[in-house]
Length: 310
Image (cartoon, rainbow, N blue to C red):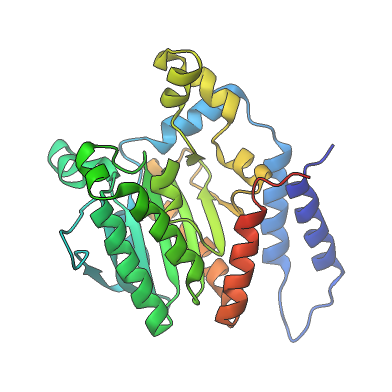
């Protein structure tokens, strides 16, 4: 029996096919995109394919936020610090242009080597990082810039110092800030979308997910440690809760899957950036011109409906 996500896509596909072309408009691209989404839902991933997504999402050569920034944004200007305590290098924020459209961007950044990983805390932000992100979100809202967020973190940093600085409150405040924004917001999970550290940047009008990314409330290792008291059962846990993109799309927690190069984003950063750029531009185009009050209403309704099955 088809799931709700499949039914929604099929309904939209049918409507588009029945529409007459107006003023030279070309609907073929949208039709093909929706058909690809249906194909991904119909092709049920195996347990091995789910674990392969986990491995690729964590691949050391996978492109990170700054790899995409340098390929997609012109006139990039990074903004640092939370104006209160420190600059958290685990979160990158700034302004740039995509095809002449000024956008604000926030995203987690992992490191390539031990030195950079230590500096960026493996992409796990302290409260200072989320406060820095909120500063840029509010800047975007004030000046009418769309917000793009790139999610790639195992989770928010769980250390004692982070808790003392108000980690839980910072994550909640970041979510509330995104919910109140009157500008278009697009989030994309580009690697690991782990727990509160991910959702803090993903309360967006359009939530995308790369083909080999993962998005979940807990890591497979953490889930295995809780259920079987054995972190080595991570593969079994991943097969059970299915953090891969096709299942996230089927559940409705994301809106679309961004394709990657055939062997994965890590083999061709330029092609991965091109495909991501196409999806970001498409999402921003869909949201352009919608009044702020309407964006807020739709966004809140969307997230309040998540997890409601009856």
